[in-house]
Length: 421
Image (tube, rainbow, N blue to C red):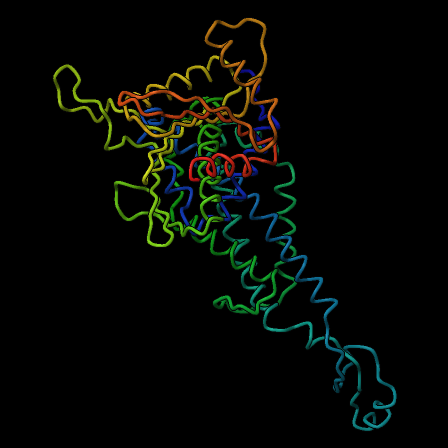
């Protein structure tokens, strides 16, 4: 089979989703997100979803390992540098000999010496030592389980994490540089390296608590290429979701998982609420029947993301650089506009790669993409206005959000500011 390598864009997407995952795990964890996304008929293959989830966890595990090694290095530096210079007496010398005092104590076979031991052995280092040992145990366990799951596949190699084992070995070394202690609750005065270690410990416990679905030994893995595609599709939807959450948090909204099945996430500010659904049909579908049957749920459109409040906004995310695929996405969004009559529909994709032969529909997609390319960094979108069935204007945004660029938060902010003026 032809080798399938992640592109630079793919790797940036994985990296950025990993960053947001760690930032928003308190809001909604990845396992919950992907379980909710199973409702989308495009992702009904349970094995494929499991592979996507495991692939995401593998990269997040890599990020956590790098971060905990960073904490260990910072703590060890503090342990060596920030010391209390004290004087000790003992029958053996454990530091620089203090000659004047030793002359007085020598008849009793007692030496005086200078030591750093007490200052370098504060309780915070002992707590970190306990955390590092638990973190190492969890990382080692999860890493081996995920690699065993993929042992018949080359997927793990595609992440190009050649230094993963190096970081795991560093963590193994550093965990023994701190004395044994007990894990306690974090406190406000903890140093930054200890706070970071606490967050990593809690994240790993949450990942293990979710009982990562590794499947049974007899499960058959789809082709490597299919696994990677599923992973990247889901990651791109997650990326857009996190950008949306980031915007509303900056605006002062409190974000939390909804306890009602109808919505997945609720955002609240000053008593006003906005709701987000993921890959779900919506109550306001205009679909009435299929061949006179009232069982229409399976035939309803399922937008990737829907934002519902005083306005109804639908998002469709297409992780592709193919003009034909983006054209399909554009038609899909227009179908949603007919079925749901939202105030605004938004098609999001990373950009189109140029090819020589295009049909008429793809030429239009390229023209739109070219127009977006020529805009300012935070205005990477075009706005189309339609008249709906009730003669009220309906808007459609076509947006470029490319993991290779750094202005994606600004692009999302610019669009949302236009919508919620």
